[in-house]
Length: 298
Image (cartoon, rainbow, N blue to C red):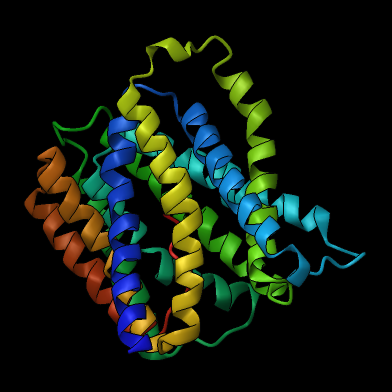
């Protein structure tokens, strides 16, 4: 019974994360990327801080809490990642962006080999090559997409966000002794603080009067639900469900994002992109097997 509840919760989490692609694409039309990322994580920080206060007696903060590393990870995993992610969707389609994000598990495997010395077998090596070729084909196949302002630039930015999140995940492996809620809250707040000066420098004269109510609703949804509550739900599912099942759910995230983008935004996929998508999915399956490689960042 407990497992069935966790499965439904996990399906809901993946659906929410998949919805972030088309929603971000829509909000990008009315809010600059830096301001969008800042307000999203102001909301997320408030929700997570509230959750921390309800568990404060159970959370122990060590005297030698690694604040320097926290701010470095917050810079990479929140400030830079979400700004680049949001910025990329100004130029490329949400469906293409979602599918490029599906390359994250493969990228993490490569970085784990380079920086952690983890071994890569022949099958994984072939899977990595197939995935890289698929991403390149997906990026190239979007070069003339009429539904994007500048698809090549957007796709390169999205690939950059994949590299940022993969590096963040590798660095995060050394922080696993800290309480998960405290760690996530600290990283989110640190990244939000670092977003403030960048946002003011990038768009100092932005007027909030031009932001429609629908965009504010979307920002609150993405901050409170997708970036805060879904993490807490995901943490619960990790404790209850087998790792193999979690991995299969995570691999659904880019596909759901692409499908929702196609349905809600009426985007189109070219034949070259279709081939690239197939190669990425095959590569992910060959590389990650049945194991969850990382928390999806959406």
